[in-house]
Image (cartoon, rainbow, N blue to C red; front, side, top):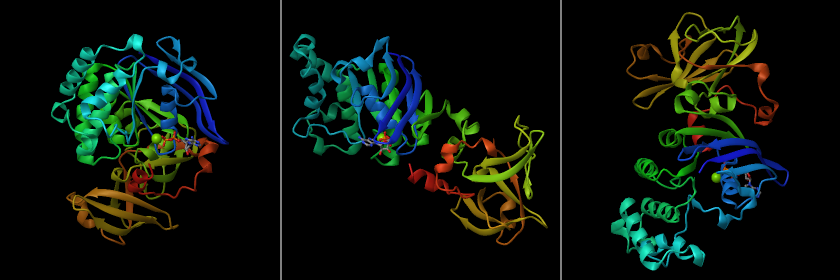
Length: 373
Ligand SMILES: Nc1ncnc2c1ncn2[C@@H]1O[C@H](COP(=O)(O)OP(=O)(O)O)[C@@H](O)[C@H]1O
Ligand SMILES: [Mg+2]
């Protein structure tokens, strides 16, 4: 089933939760919606499922106007982060449930349902759990069963809302690989919501980055990583250091910065902001620079250097601890910052809606980005 969404908007009270969503999903595609908490991901999924209604816009699935259809007529498979399996039913009965409650005219016979459930149990590699009850399952096993329950009805569209969000990182990685395999075997049109970049990029054919009710960028991992379309995406993808620079004939310049590695950009002359990842900053000791190393800590693999500008601004750099330069990078050393990669945005182009955010310091830690999502 192909999904075509256009001009979708939704307000809750005075809050614009979706501000005009345009998105097409091809038949059989697995698309990830990636964005921080509150960006409108769940609301968008609920509208597709028929659990919420938009204020404006269109939702067309295989040519049919789904906004005219009630939830039960859309045949959606939905898995939530905390999917409540029926606690008094065995895994086998949980899987069968969706089929047994079909309208009589569409309901398969008992034997057909049993065969279908048996097939799913094997396909999803949960046959050994068939007679257990949900309390006897681990979190990962429960989510496999939840996905099985969603798949049992042969959904037209599969919607997964942070289905692995409550699980440990290692189990999440296993389930991701498992889900990718399941998707390849079923070919169901799937929308997967997550705030975890790694999960989105590993799973999805295309990633849709959402922020504040808008789609900020759609693309593959490398493009989103190397060429963030907006300042929001740059920050979200870890380019947390923002350096003011001056552009002249497409070249960026700044005191204490070595920007020769950056390609020339077709941007107007004048003030610009360079967004950089801490690992793309290599401090090089020099005799005179407005930047100095303020502190140096190590996590074993990397040195984390806090760099302080003479005007008080701070930036951070991550340097491999075994890099030859590492031993020269000690506190108080004046350094020039060699920038290996980064994205330039003309400062004036900052959309007004961004300035409503708390004033952005030069630096915010990547950890902060992760936990805020
Ligand atoms: N039923 C509701 N009533 C009022 N506000 C809501 C409701 N559901 C969601 N919101 C608000 O809409 C925004 C987006 O929420 P949501 O779609 O859940 O985002 P996400 O899934 O990306 O975290 C949030 O600010 C949230 O508080
Ligand atoms: Mg959500």
